Image (cartoon, rainbow, N blue to C red; front, side, top):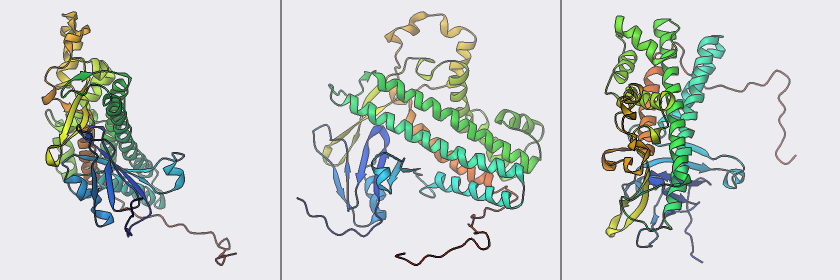
Length: 362
């Protein structure tokens, strides 16, 4: 049996979710191991010195880290309870989205203390929705892991297209992320409108219409406006959501989408197998083509020949979701700054006469 050196760190199991469906597993020791062998059948195991050095060591592999599951209890480790999940950030605070989820709950607490029902409700919904979007990313990552596991036993050929039951699950999970992310976007707009404009506006469309006649002059409003114009990230996110909700399932909206075999290069010439779930380019154009009938002029869309051609230049669903979460987290920080109430951490206060202190051992 391999002898494990003493490792000074919290008693927690960590599972890093990587791009492409890969996983990096760390027990309560100084090693992290990839759960997928290289294309040459070799395992990858890395040693690190300190608890906090895990992420830096894995980043050296140059595989994007999507997030991390923390298993703190036996119930979590056995699957009876969900782990603590956090989406990582490439720049800024490592757990930006989780921090923002907490921050909005603290604003909710302040609003409760001030008996401001409107802000209390808005902050509560924002806190919930950030966590919901984070969880959607985890669901998508788990679908990727299953897609990768199902593809490895077959003849793994670089850039080959394939389709199985897991592929549909991946695209459905991505669609769920798009919907929840745009709910969060609209909550941001609603909070901004209630606090800065003192208006009841509950959608990005309503806010942009207001900005056409009344351009924002504050930093949060300018950021919202700039992000939502044509060609910018918030507009593109909304276009993908609108395509799914108002036109067709994403995998059938334009060219038919399939899973794609890919790899990440590792040191010493090794290659780590992974998968890519491409998403269509120009979602607004696809929706327009469906609405005006142009898409249906040639029924070849129902044949395999309609499979996506330019896979290399298509965004990957998981990596796109991860990027959007970081942008939403940054936008959340900007919107939170316009809150008229500062965040305060709730403190549990026992009712007079109800506090009982029991000595240890009794």
